[in-house]
Figure: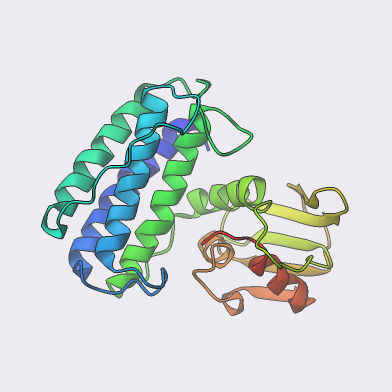
Length: 242
């Protein structure tokens, strides 16, 4: 996906996130984010948007020195979120994706942030919809892009005590383009190739379902899993991300 498409997704899912939070009510538990209420989820995404708006807008080369905003009363959260989303959207629309700025990734560019904001907002939009007792999938092209982002940037963040996958994994979207093969390596843990290839296990399904399984929002049983289920389970459990 190109940055313009990511920005369009951020517009769509950013607005839908606020609507879903409002529909759910701010005191409702977000079961996909254990321990959080909808207000907590709303403030989390508000903070995330503020952080990256500052990093990109000020072309910061480090996160150090960033001043975290104070949490307002719940009554004001929706208005503050919507204002922050508009500011983030304005900053990201104006920036050159090749601009250099700090990120936690090896990709130190504004383009990385544009993609990350579209993806984080989409997953949390799903969280908010789920809290509102609605099951609205992530748009398929965006979800496929999210799988690619996850496998490129997140899969190396290994949880303490995580077991090696112990085999290769083929991931295949059934509703849009997107195939990847993951193979164990001694040096990096997993090598990811964007290709069709036979693995020790295959995980097939709609792109949204695969992405939500990778982010541990859905159970592996939501997918068509062929081969060694234990390899697939170890892949899902390997990251320290939530």
